[in-house]
Image (cartoon, rainbow over all chains, first blue to last red; front, side):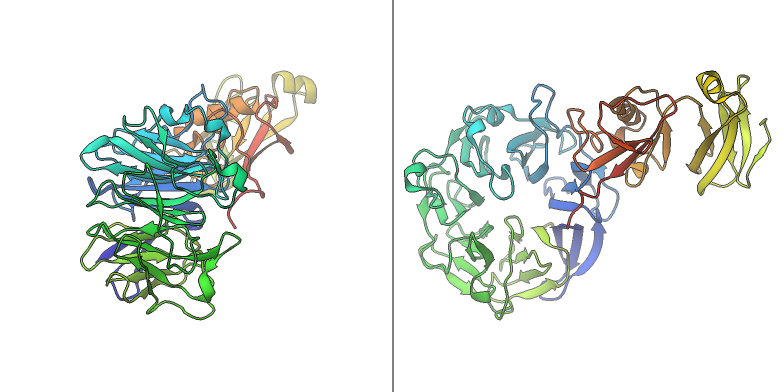
Length: 355
Length: 162
């Protein structure tokens, strides 16, 4: 049995089922509220969800059972000495390599740290105090920290991605930061404004577990790979029908693998040519193979958001993604064929495999 | 009004203090209710409206664990709707000692900590899609409230998700 946590514009859907067949909606939590993101912390089995009321603001919720009672975490609020900061949205929650430690990213772009399994949180001030922060500009989703990478056996090392302020790297648990901009090409900027700009709109970034210094990145026009832990980037979009898109995922057992779902362009954020295709590389981006078996191939103009694609780590690899039109698709054979796990949910904001 | 008086068909007067300023009503059943009880005005209200005038209090809901509701004349009332009411343990009306809307909301937060952060943000400003009405007027957190004011906390039609 596979369990999916599907965040949506209208609550959290807990889906359960056997790969290859339609999944059952085991539970719907937070009805009417936006669930931006939800995960299960594999270290202790605790579920964490980012919930935003359109009226009453954001909050981070925890539960031992996603179908049961949820409780509210504390501390995800800017302190009094930062009067210009108000948490608008909690984008991502990431277990650290340290026991009991988690990180969260928010809009406005800030990093938060918990040392008690997510019950209480504190602003990580190092990134907030970066001197260039006042120059950062928001992307379409707001100025947000949406991706956090950690390193096995090195809890001091962190990399975060910000829309639209590029990649930032820390070697001291977030106390100090440097940029990882080299090679990222913002063609949406005038040529004379590209040099030294912070306006680098990263959409997603994932690290290869078996090759810790390799990262894959979906950019706002461009797909990139880094082999030096985010210091420099190489464009690997050749062979894709479009280099725009939001999520990128990797097969944890193959550091040369990555999957993307190309969208036409930033001015037309739907699947290319009216066909829903997932593209896979097994040679670190030298070539890409489309997968479409079981996915809509006629008049299919769909959008997949940055956190709405995940893998299960099994062998063969399971992949799951959701669309803003409410479908969730899955593959139990590394993308070779696909099935509809759920056909009619609310607009999907995130998909995470939780069991 | 004395101990034992039946209030409408739903409650019995449980407690009346000697100055007639605090009235407790023991509800006969813990359902959502809408009831009016009446007491004479005292103090400034009596001076303004006359001692024989009547004040009106509404009781919307009581819980099974707390069937007694008490109201103190001359203290502002904050009314809550779902989901705030749920965060307040089902309490629909809270009396608070406050001179401004912000103080009133903070007092509600102190009484019901799960509400903290829902109405006001971390810096004490009303969230953009929450409205507070005082006696029919939409107000900011700095608006003054009179001792007999009724504050309604409502979600704004500008909020929500499409």
